[in-house]
Image (cartoon, rainbow over all chains, first blue to last red; front, side, top):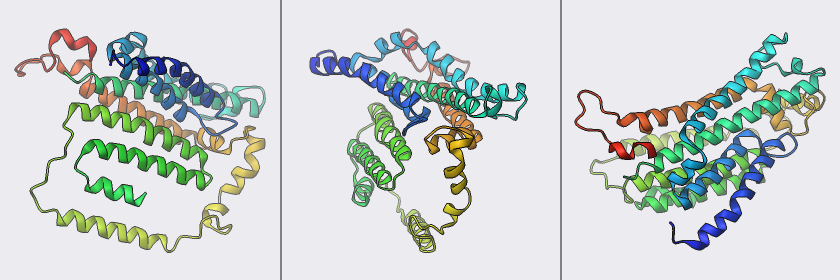
Length: 138
Length: 181
């Protein structure tokens, strides 16, 4: 799609705002609609848009295969690790109350980290699936 | 929504089917907004109308654009579909009215979530506190499911699948294009 200059220009303008909106949805999920799942999908859609317009090879330079594979696992490890941290601090698995000095503070921190783990895994999953599918057209 | 669903069944042009399923998801998202379930609507719009439409288009690029006409008669699947649909519709007749205060769903845990989550969790969005804290195990399970989906796609289609092994005639992807996959 190298000759579609309108698509290239518009997508270049759009991508930063899509990423910013994804981060807003991620970190504002405690106060409004949204959360890790939605934010992950929106974040991934920015990379997929880049891949569609500028080609999978260029998108892979931005986000190499090894990076997506590591982030894919890191999201789940972060989520499960928050649970294990709860055990070490004297609570049950996935008990956020013990993570900080106050119970609500612990809940805030726990939900923040857990949602971040969900977002990371969802975003890299979507990017991985799309890149692998779109890379098949030989 | 029903019109889109029937059009999806009847059409043989898969490109149109993918577009219509995206429209179906968008209509479903609007329905969720009308039912005040904005979080679900958000997910449906992002995942159903957005990403899954894209992934199906990516799949269409690999396969053909038209569905093949089936030769066999398909009365048995039709009967099963209609009976199951009839049973489901019959089941909805016993359900309480939407938003009824005495519905079992609104009596058991919902009051606890609405009244206590502000002091117990301390964040305004009740959906997020239920999703991430009260039902943390479920969300962990969902995350693992998504992780498993990515692993499955990587194992089936990723870089390792076309390596030559004894018994195979030749690598599926030429060696020089392997890095792109």
